[in-house]
Every structure is written in structure tokens, then in C-alpha cells.
Length: 325
Image 1 (cartoon, helix red, strand yellow):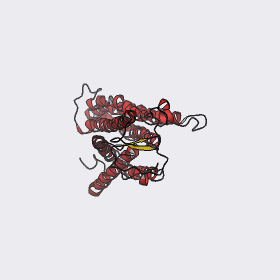
Image 2 (image 1 turned 180 degrees about the vertical axis):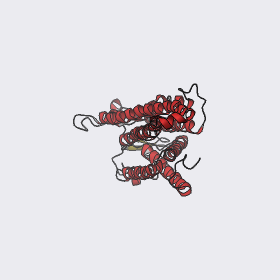
Image 3 (image 1 turned 120 degrees about the horizontal axis):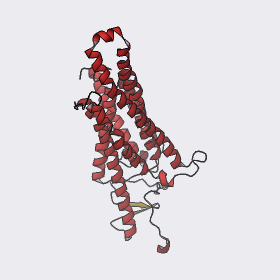
Image 4 (image 1 turned 45 degrees about the vertical axis):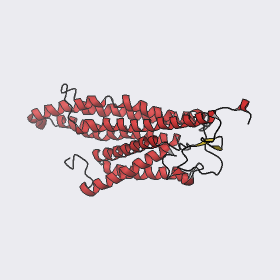
């Protein structure tokens, strides 16, 4: 190749190697550019070293984004449940106000993950009719994000407005007996809107955003990852697995949903890797992050399923409140 025509490959347009060469998990210093494998220790092209370094930087950023997203969602979910945040007034309970910051923090992080996918800049132009592959990803992700934000608001409002009604009912049991609608108002806010409609559609939006991530990264190969990137990536997957189990344990009937969800999503992740190997042995299933996003969710599903099974073995299908915890 003439050096005059040499062009650095973009980190957003890197494609899986079309040869039958299988990358080794231990080949930390191998450069894969344009189908040519060059060891950085013997390379004389600084440009190729820079491209290799840039790819590692992008993988590291993605690992931090996955960790940050899982950690922020976990904090925003667990803190209002397990802590007693003081109320400003009966109309402004502390735990509900804390939840206001959830989508403000977690939604941009989910957005940043999607922007790291190669298909967002180099996907097919006519993937779904006249829509490009990137447009399909944006469309599906936006729908999930809309569900997430909309029903997060419904959940927060229901949790906030039920408390004054509850306080009134406790202070005036005679009126509640005389006017049963007072209890129905509280019950509908707490059970129907907060615990069922808002809970499940709010969580459904978050799940849909994660499904779109799997779709967007389905053909993308990463790494080999550095040791630090592997650690960050593993911690993020563990936190997301704890989140899946925690949400299942908290929601009404959530254990059944969580059990089915972790099994189904984990199976889908395995199939995505095994049936689309992208020139990796077994699709990179047993590597540390070569299929970074898919393996992130697969590991989380395995851990989440394990925690749910342990909980069911000890408490049955009772959620956290029903189990008295």
C-alpha cells in the first residue's frame, strides 16, 4: 500500500476481520487493522500504534459508561427504598424528591452508550425501508426512553401524592369508614398506578433501551481489553446483575417476572454471540469482553438469576415487603 494513500481507520468504522484468523484473549498487543495483524512490538508504523491505542481508549470509555449507568440506576433505585429521607412537607416527601434526579442522570448515560456503537456512523443506509440502521436504532431507543421518562414521572407523582391522602385517612378513620372512596383513592395511587402501571412501564422503558444497545452492538468486536478495562467492565456487569435482582425482589410479582426475564435475556445474549461469531471462536463467548456489551448483559443476567433463585429458595415468591425485610 502506498503511504500517500494510507488512511487511518476510524474507530467508528472498524469492522470484524473477514479472515478465519481467531484472536487470542491474551494478544493484548496485537493490532488488527484492515484485516492485517501486526504486533505493536515489531510495528514500524506509528499511525497503526495510534489507531490501536485509540481503540483501547474507546473500549475503556465504553466500560466506564456501562459501569456509571449501572451504578447510577442502582443508587437511584436503592436509596429511596432502603433509606428514610426526611420529608420537606407532607406534599414533598424526601424519597420522591430524590427520584426526580433519576432520569436526569441515567438517561444521558444510556444515550452516551448508544453513541459508541459503530452502526451509528457506519451502519447500512437502507436497513428498514428508507430508514438507515442508525435511524432504526434511534427510533427504537427513543421509544424506550420515552416510556422510561414518562412512567418514571407517573411513578414519582403517585408516590408523592399518596402520602397526604394516607395521612388524612389515618387521622380520620371514621370518615374513611363513611366514605370508602377515600381509601380507594389511596389504594389506586399506591397499588394500581405506582406499583403496577408505573413500575412495570418505567422498568419496561429501561429494559427496551438495553435491548436496543444489544441490537446496536450485535456485530461489534472490542479489545483485547486492558486489565483495568476488564475490571471496570466486570464491576459494571455485577452491579447491573444486582440491579436486576433487586428490582425483581422489590416489585409485586417481580420475582416471577425477573426469573423469566433473566433466563430469556441471557439466552438471547448467548444466541447473539454463538450464531453471529464475527470471526471469533464461539463468538467470543468465553473471552473477557470481546463482545463487550452483549457479555455485559449476559453476565448480569447470570448473576441476577442466581440471586433471584437464592431469594426464592429462602422466602418463596414473596417480595421484600411481604417477606418483612
